[in-house]
Image 1 (cartoon, rainbow, N blue to C red):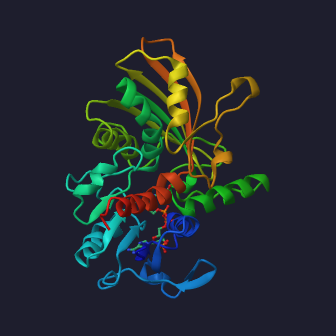
Image 2 (spheres, protein in one colour; image 1 turned 90 degrees about the vertical axis):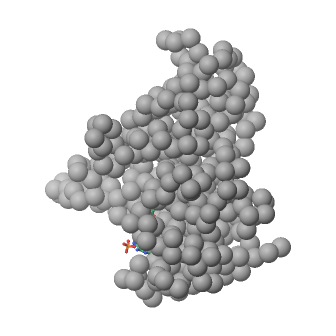
Length: 336
Ligand SMILES: NC(=O)c1ccc[n+]([C@@H]2O[C@H](COP(=O)([O-])OP(=O)(O)OC[C@H]3O[C@@H](n4cnc5c(N)ncnc54)[C@H](OP(=O)(O)O)[C@@H]3O)[C@@H](O)[C@H]2O)c1
């Protein structure tokens, strides 16, 4: 089997660390792992398969011996470094939002639209974490019953903002318990013991950029005819995003059949037994690969309406795992 030189750009970040762990756990065919990060982190190390690997600087020339570059260094870094890496003949799989809506760049969730990889031109985009788990859960339903409209509210973990936000939630909680004044730096308000209806920047239409990512990415990957209304909320959870999803379908459905479809689908675990208080919980999905779906029930307020609760580890299926699965799918499709 062919083995690849794989770079992880932003290797010291929350997603970069999870990428290295995911590559290791899935036994990805690696010849050489090349962790890259910003110049100020030069000389630091990451651990891969029990060995310390020196972190190098992500800069011109760093991708010449790289086959696959998994990027998670933020949008600004991707805008500069991804074309550089592609020019040096590495295939870029980018986690930031920098390239997602570029018509030349495939935006891919392997369970949803793997065929879009075939037309890649060197850069492939990994969708937003909230979109990924929503579309994994909705794809089997859309294929059978044609979704017309989605109304989604998210309950997103602080790890979606990165390691520094996880540290802030931890510190604010400690300060509260010990009666100290809390410092606020990452979010505009206290995140500990709070819920912020504000993720990413506000746009001219009064939605946030995160909310519009869910709208636009759904149209690009699943179906341009679907209308989406999203409210994205940051909650004091370290890891795993939860989503309340309401859909309206074209065709009439039977809820039991929806459960059957979801149970049979790749990458989904149905956890749904109200009688025993069983439903997906953020804390139970940390480090897990699947998208967990529960509270599946008819919405009696409209004709073909359905409600469900969808939970997944944002660092894993929402970021690192989806990127690694894109690379695996490219190998299967002889694109690498
Ligand atoms: N966390 C999630 O759930 C999630 C999900 C999907 C996508 N993403 C995306 O993935 C990216 C990374 O997120 P994260 O949560 O891992 O952030 P993070 O914890 O802040 O990590 C980013 C890493 O990249 C480094 N870096 C910054 N500028 C760089 C540059 N020019 N070249 C190389 N490395 C650079 C950072 O170094 P310093 O810290 O020293 O600056 C840090 O080590 C973001 O674009 C984010 O939107 C995140």
